[in-house]
Length: 380
Image 1 (cartoon, rainbow, N blue to C red):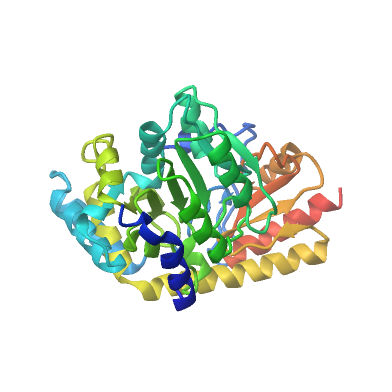
Image 2 (image 1 turned 90 degrees about the vertical axis):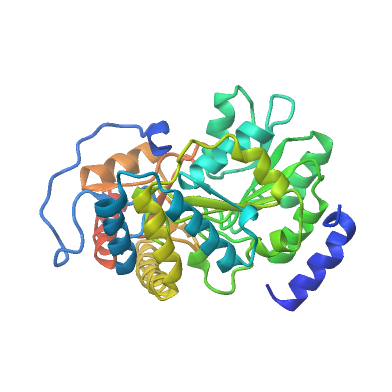
């Protein structure tokens, strides 16, 4: 955090600081995906999955080695040692104490726990619209209806002023901020977010989902800084599924006050972190050079893809993440089915944006092929 941001946050905070989900979401349509040969010198293979924002490069070599070794040597044991080691590594990485870190079976488990612990029918979650649908889904399991606040702009994906007003006028158990925003790819202004966090009622938990933060770059203003400053009602969630390339091993984590994490800890699955995931995550965290390579390759493929969209006359929302939300100009069902018939699995339907589709940034070869398919679609 820059010095100006730190000073403003501390000044605003004042004495306050001292005081296996994918399977749950239905993907419409069961059109078969063609079984086609490799393209792009073996770097793109059908089906091309551009639906879940996975890292096409995968994890760093040392993470692969550590995960493989843990399976061979320790898969008959629960991951106590590796789990505790990962907590220590994360605490050191973010300059926090061990009891300010909580691990989850992916970030998704932590989001579910937050809804279970902090929300009820009279204290619903407050979310933006559109936004990552996990909170809406998990609230529905409790027969709780989230209060949805339309986004002020697609650049940021949130109307923080309206969300804050709703917190005071309607009340809520938690407010969910996805920064960078999924599905729009925008990033909030750091000063506005600082104001929002400080002004939110202390009896409301502010959940900031930073799943795609690493893609923004070193200048991203992470809310981990505010956890260090002692904000008592702030929960920051991240994952090893995206830039670190460990989506299949299910490792997420969050940071917050001891009181918040203490309330959540009893709701975790027992032994929710596996041997391979913990071992691989420790090595992945230690290899920030690989993170930079992933970020660089993602930027390269995204720039090429967006330049192609512009040539095709396809509108899209500029993104700082590993996905792009584009306008189909026709119902989502049409572009989804067309892409799938050509071996591409795109993102699911966004109810408030029914003529848009979110596409993950895959390899350069995959995105070049995707552009060729989109060229056919827009010419129909």
